[in-house]
Length: 117
Length: 114
Image (cartoon, rainbow over all chains, first blue to last red; front, side, top):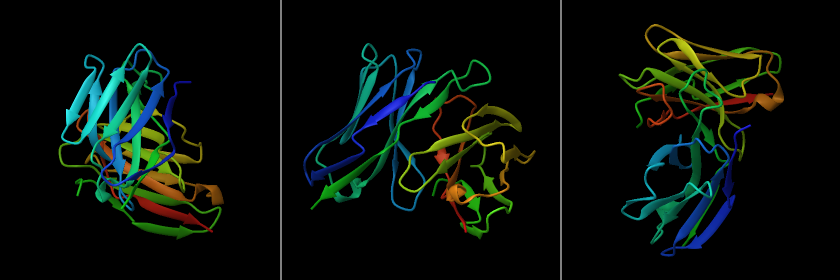
């Protein structure tokens, strides 16, 4: 079936350094790639997303890049801060799960990001 | 606060029992998703409803069922509970059926099966 692989499962970086989380997907028809952040004890929250007609998108310290040829996309967080500590999930839209032509999301397994003071 | 509410917050029950989890979507959202998150695990998509109709199905067990009511709130029913069903259950809502719309997650219901 359709699959999204996310690496690493845990990432520990020094405060102020950059963090990069990578995802690969299998469905070449995927066209929407969101990233969600889950803080401890809370539900996930969308932080940034990218569509297949764009190669890169940036929002302050967060950026996402997409390589459709290689079928991978990455989340980049610069100047990391303690509040960036959380679990991050990538996802990719896939037509396989849907009962009609609408796409549904396939989720990565998550990356636990730890910011060391 | 995402605007999505889930009740109860915590639920402790015994194996073999049946429970119902409730979700109220954000005002104006027609789509409701259910997810299961076991300890230190990712999000497992269970099922999606859109405006009262089942829209997509993920890895939902036959012992589990869901529905969305005319007022758009949704319930997830878990029966013949097993120890392995202990998990966080999240509900999310979005304005439309397609996956390219932001999903707003509730705070979750923590289910413990003893």
